[in-house]
Amino acid sequence: MRMKGFLISVLMILGVLGLNLVKTEVEAEATFNLSAIEFADQMGVGWNLGNSLDAYINGIPSETAWGNPVVTQDFIQAIKEAGFTTVRIPVSYMNYIDDRNHYQINEAWLNRVQEVVDWVVDAGMYAIINIHHDGNNDYWGGAWLSIEEFPYENPNWQWSGLDLQLNQHEIQRKFGAVWTQIATRFKDYNERLIFESGNELRELWNYGDPVGRSSMPNLNRLNQLFVDTVRTTGGHNSQRYLLISGYNTNLWITSSDHLGFQMPRDTVNDRLMLSIHYYDPWDFSLNEENDDVFKWGDEIHQIGAPHVDSWGHESYVRDALNELNTKFISRGVPVIMGEYGSVDKSHVDPIAHEYRRYYLEYVTRAMVETGGIVPVYWDNGWAGDYGFALFNRHTGAQIHEDLVTAIVRAPQHRVRPLFSRQLFEETFARYANNSPAVRTAYEQALIAADRYRNHVSRENLVTVETAYRNLVTLIRS
Image 1 (cartoon, rainbow, N blue to C red):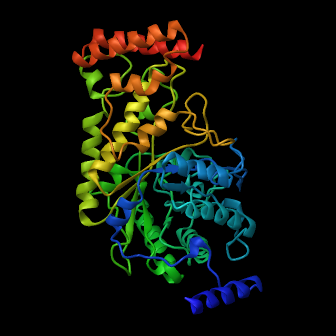
Image 2 (cartoon, one colour; image 1 turned 60 degrees about the vertical axis):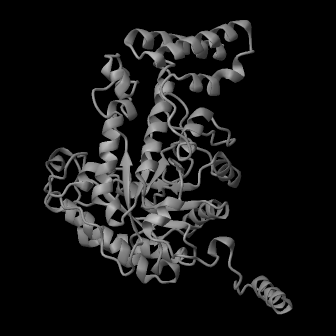
């Protein structure tokens, strides 16, 4: 014990002298003794630091460009305290890459990325970093990472107005150089840091199946280059868990047998994971131009309720996750559901919030029950109409405590059904004594909830929705 203490003292002195022999907590001894599936199961439930380090203006990344404040360590700690155990940190590089100087990344920007990563990993959470909007096809705004090449096979280029002669050899050289620098910077970090190859790489203006015969092969080449590049940087990167981006991170296109997506080869076994995003059904989850759809669930669809889509409900979720299980998870490749969620349409009708709560809780729980899937909620910091924010980025306070609870409780608890007594008690009981009017509305809501759950009908649905709406309105007034 005395000798160990002496050695530690010597190492600390050398560190002060600038010899940097004492590793930080994030550079502590790493253990890579779990299979990818076992590792994924340890990552728990995650959250995205969206529209911060990935934001940009005129090709220049800036974490405040899209209205979010500078990220602080206190804010990261608030995410930890809320119950999340994984943080995905989307990062854009764009014009911070010097094409004329061997694709060197701006040092200050890479330092800032490292600082945020350190806060996440030092808090005991898992961190995921990627190359994000560099590949979003915004060639007017600084994007460069593409799976397409000249001469273009995608007809969308004919009316794009862009005069770009994309060269895959140059793109791949740049991609390899950028990942070499990122991987080298973090090569001594332990297993809590995961690298993700890209984000939603697809053809220009095409969100469906690729139409160009080179698009999928080019994605496969980039993913292979990503793995090969990271492995050659040494350190813990020789064993690091790596996240491979599916085509547009689309579940069905990536899983399709005939479209040709391939997981890369690797020099080490059981270290690769697949990146997929989930925003189905579109009109409920993402479409800001369709205010007519703000409800979700097979139950209400079957009784003919209005404002609900005709597809994408609970049974669809299970089918989609079973597809991932069959094609990837059962073969030892876990899935990081790197983005999922639904926009806030409560300005259209307050009851939209309850359907959003149910959707998030159900989808998260379904992923956990499938096994080998890590749910990572998409949060873009916007708390207004059609927002995704769960937290106030300035204070760290939870904007929607019930939605946070719905997500982080999912691994341990069964899903609370729509408009249940349990839901009303857990969400609204604290407000019941605000006034006699609120107390009365609360009691009426409990009666309506029992009536609806005992007999699911369109008439009873209208009653419980009305009670919910009235209660929320009174509480807000």
